[in-house]
Image (cartoon, rainbow, N blue to C red; front, top):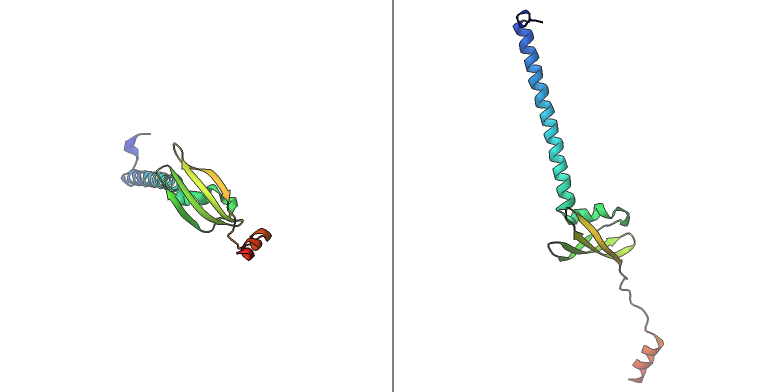
Length: 122
């Protein structure tokens, strides 16, 4: 096919559609790349959000940061099974769960017989 046989209108139409398609493809690739960077940043740089993603079965409601260091964080979390002590540590690329311990509720208990006798003697 010779270029001289193509009309000016047909040539400009082809060029415009090509440029438009290129802009759409580059824009979509940039958007997907940005979303991936944001997601990775949320997982690796924000351990307060990562605790929810790393322990989905715990049913975590409220968290409280107890200790915060560069490579380690300690949390007190209200879960569906009661309060838990959770330690997150930072690996080479992302945070991971180092330890999960169930805590006992601070409910008052009745004094034992020995304690009652000690009080009565005083």
